[in-house]
Image (cartoon, rainbow, N blue to C red; front, top):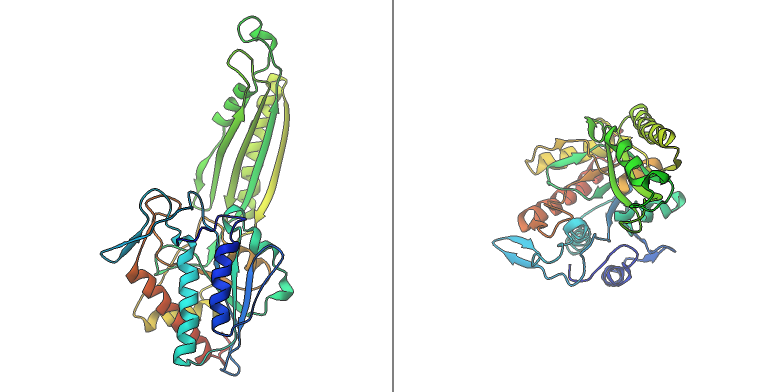
Length: 355
């Protein structure tokens, strides 16, 4: 956790992981963006090849992290994030590799992918070519409570809006101007944002505009997002936001430029799917009842599912992520590792199962 790995600056942390994998005689390569892709050859004939994934990057402030351990809980010094999102996932996978080697546990082929730039739009996973993934299904280690499994995740679109009005002297001739910030404010006030329903959310997150207090602002830039598990609802919310901006710009005679970019697509797996049935049995062995919840966030699992690799999201125990109060208990970290080990054992034992 002490090694910083902010998006686009994960190389030093990736070196650490790659050197450790090499010490276990596991070949590991990096693609052009910096993703680490390795392959652990199995010794359980007929078992499926499983994908294990965690992302290496963290959010800010993620430099000069000073982890502390107290009463079985790991935190930072409260001046930075901890980085359990998602170095907890990385640590669990690395521990499993060591345990499999040390105890000579039978297992099928395992493809390990540590991605970069997950926190800024899943760019690392998106850059991986489908032909480089050999796995039949996967487990993305990137979540909260260790007993929570996500089989569903939403689509996300990012919005980029520019409203162009007209500048004027704010004290002498304000009526000659078109206040772009005011136009934007009126449009946003009419929008349904926040939680729209159980499947859909929308947010206006960034507003930037104006040059000085004595100038009617001629331009404002707005950034936002829309997420939904339901394609129809997603389309409707995007149309609603565009209508609000268009209507107010038309009234004020301001210009509007708006773009919506697809970040990732939704996925929805079933309890009957093999990727989950194996995990469910692993939980049962651990005497843990898994809790199925749809997530409102995106992860590398969105990209892998889009590629046709059924992948579910597993919790690592990270708590209060993306804040300086981020924490993880040693107990949860250990439980996450044990569950993953049981999944690997189960996939070997169920090698002839159809589901």
